[in-house]
Amino acid sequence: MVGTATAEVLPQTRVNLDQVLVGAGNSIANLRSLVAQVAPKMASVLLQGESGTGKEVVARAIHDCSGRSRAPFVAVNCGAIPAELLESELFGHEKGAFTGAVAARKGRFELAEGGTLFLDEIGDMPFDMQVKLLRVLQERTFERVGGTKLQKANVRIVAATHQNLEGKVESGDFRMDLYYRLNVFPIDVPPLRERPEDIPLLAQRFIDLQQEQNGEVISLSRDALTQLCQCEWQGNIRELGNLVERLTILYPGEVVDTQKLPSRYAASQADWVQTPRHDPEAVAKFIDDLFKDMDDSTQEKVAVLPAPVDSGAEDLSGLFATVDELPPVTPHVVDFSIGDIDLKEHLAEIERDLIFAALEHTDWVNAQAAKRLNLQRTTLVEKMRKYEIQRT
Image (cartoon, rainbow, N blue to C red; front, side, top):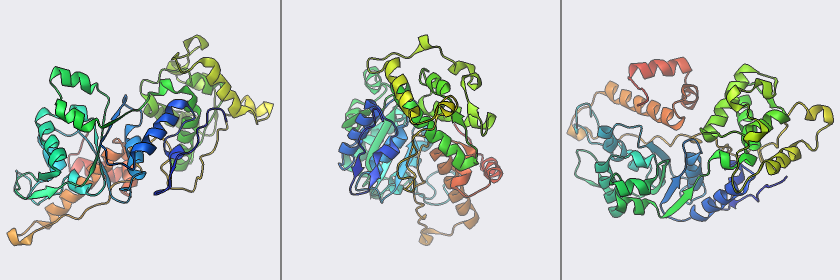
């Protein structure tokens, strides 16, 4: 197949990066190479790229290809948590540290002990929290909110942002010392419009995912596939996944041609996205290669794309999820020597934390979060209403 890169397999974990970071073009091949190079090291990594490009998937790939792969991968969205709660989320708190702190609670640093802490949207972190984070990165120790005991921080930091951090440093909104502490090994995650030759492979992964989750499948005609390779994809890979899901709902079991695509994706040949590395003829040839082994009648209808390699392997394949699995649940430590606890409140807090974590790790898609928690979607919605959990 044209443009197919050689698989990068890390011997210590047998993670196939072709399965994780899907694509056939040079940009995704370069990304896989950078991940393979930095994963075994301890260096902090700063992922930069637009929203929806799959930065958390790249972060998870770095973790899974590292010597820390058997320890937790814990993600926190620095922009989704209110500033007044972020310190407690990161460092935990002691019982009585503030109103509602009915028991001691571990923060994300402790939950990620020995593993990787992914700080998403690091550019949205409040300035005062930047100071505290910098100290942890320098000293490798921290204190829980309301506590005095120093806790060790044995974690690898991978941060991500869609913002121009250098610009924020110049404007005084982001600390220069923290920026250089995080930016040891920068990786740019390319937008989808710069990698149109990867769209057929990504689209098929989303189609396979819909079939696995809902039992419904669609096919894309050659013209429809060509049309999709011409779009701007401002929402990047996330937008492509949403489109496939929408088409699967509208046309289950059918062949989707250009007439069935939403109008915003009905680009003309004159609308090809031009970049120095891509041109219409190269992408058209790539699509032709996908159809070359099919008979004439089928070629006009269905795009049968390559099946995932080693489909029996651990499902890390595709840039369609924010995370492959939730981090292991670490038991709460309760010290009865300092007094009794309210078991009902304590269990409610644990349940709320798990629900919030599941929603965060599935980008607040209720159906996926419910599946992670082995709940019915309606049950999850009821619990969200009970605990007043909502996306900020």
